[in-house]
Length: 403
Image 1: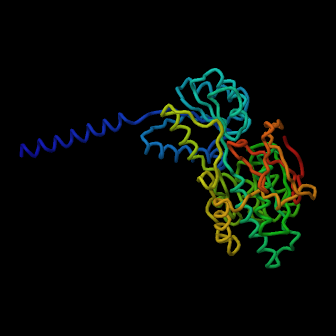
Image 2 (image 1 turned 180 degrees about the vertical axis):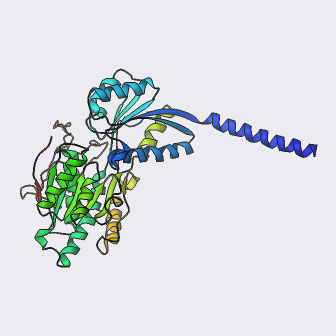
């Protein structure tokens, strides 16, 4: 009995020591995140919070314990600067700012704290500044937009084939935040995806002048429906375009989150950036005392772009097979989203285009974005991660402007 007791004590002691050693080997890091909204938007910021949760799990498996410090509802200016400084004072070793518009304020703080790494996500100024501790990150969301467009186009073509609408009535309404390249790139890719399977499709774009305003987004969707749009999509943060579409009996594709729960009779699919990989890459680098890229952009092939569940109850027959075919072609490099033979500007094929950033400043002379018959978007590190496709391609009508 004494021997058994001694053995059990030895086992307990060994287990405890082993657990202590394992725990001692884990690294801990405080990470800051400044958000334009909060997770209740069920869209943009919600998508980032999902990324923090999955990244935390992955990093824990690598022996890195993450403590997140998150600031919500900060759009731009001094409040963003204050939030970044507070996160530095809280001991954050790396701070992510999740929206366009936050970068200028972030940079004023980054210059004062060179030992802390700062990331301006969906921006374009940090990778080319003279600070060693600033970074940009985006993803090739135009790939996901194109696929969502294919899903939409399949539905529109089915409606035509069934005699529910005439070919000229295949009109998409698109709720956009602002008139600059990030949004233009997204809706252009979406339109080209739709037109690849529904040749008669056209698009109307209504800008709301805000990344996140549920009421304005709903009003814009309603205005587009009132102008005979039979399918709504969006580059805005809330679910209200989806719910407005459902209320009016038209279809919808979303962005940032699965919008089927909000509009099960309207929402066909959504696409989003999965920030898990980037969070893991950047945080792990800092935790290990390593440098990481000043600019980052990955796509479908690397798992940084995701499609939500396909609403097979309302999508067109054969949609899943077509969608899988297109995804495979993009990953293999057999399909370029912005194949220059598939669109024109004022009736002309575009053969040359200097990539410009969202403020309108030209990148260096080597910034040619078209080669091998395609416009190469978010081509980092050759160009930059932030989108620069801003051409007014034929077939799309902008109803207003918002800069």
